[in-house]
Length: 253
Image 1 (cartoon, rainbow, N blue to C red):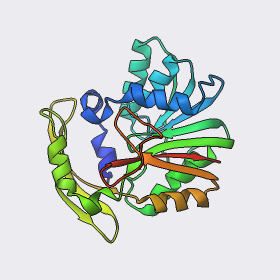
Image 2: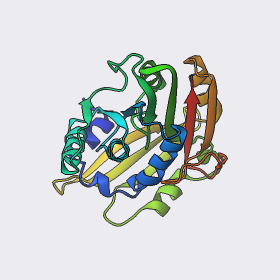
Image 3: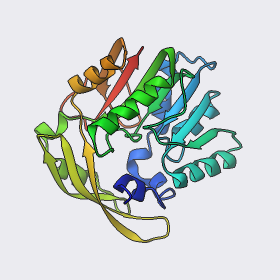
Image 4: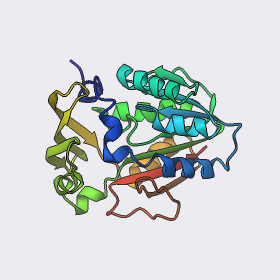
């Protein structure tokens, strides 16, 4: 039986690239460059790279990037986009819970959920963090975003999705947030690349900052900074608040 996140991306690459939540690539890559101090000698791992938007933009800017994703369809689209742009990028179909890399990268990025927080158990989500960490060099850095558990304590997730809905894009409905597990169960309605209307039952894990800090400390990170994640405008100046739907995490070994 396929999990919802596998079924979702089977035939949903062209339409995915039109979604509002993937339009912040340039500003997000600006932030990554700042964090790297514009050092083009680094190797970057893009975990859950999807159709390759960050990998492609960073490669355009002169960085060496490897992109991995569970979805063969997303990776296929990423390769097509790279080819259209005249770029050679190493895109691989990989499961983030079991990556083949060991101490190879200076930076791992995992943006727009990138697999993390979508898994059906906390243990699987932790495996993604562990594998991304293992892929890093001794003084490596890890930048990722995840759903902010402070948000649903103060707001209705249902109302948030309704307010963010745009014509012709995917919709989340029937959200029910479980305070015991910090998981939101919802139904996502979307149209795939063949024009078929589809519905999937999803469940996503929200994390509070103290949980993320604890998980990363357990993995050996020494410095952990957490900010509010503003779409396309990541900044160290944005203190995380309950108004932020996502948090931005910057961790250093």
